[in-house]
Length: 95
Image 1: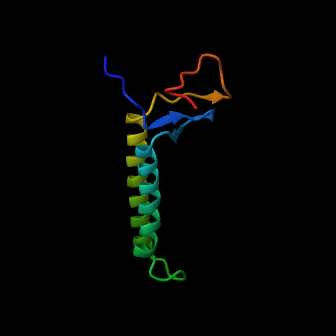
Image 2: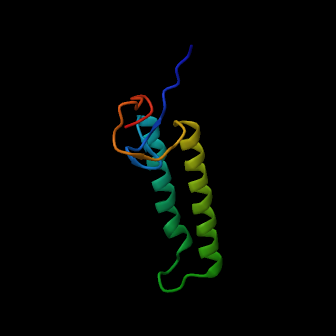
Image 3: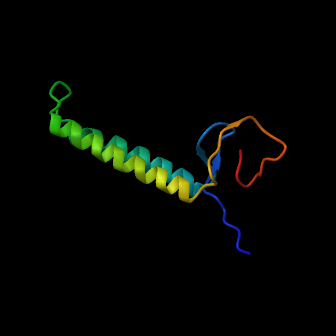
């Protein structure tokens, strides 16, 4: 049986994921780079932000976030609410 190694693990507190391998960190850093790189591309001057530029920035931010979530859900365990370490935690899935 081929065991899948998750790129993300469940957070110890709350709901969601945290990177667990270098591949997961590359995905998260890539997301941040894309968001930060879009800022100067869509904002010509800080005092004059056009509606079209703001709408495009929000659209691209939404698409990048959607891609991040899709990879996280595909390469991580099923998320669930956690509040601390439990005896039944799986070290392959939970921090």
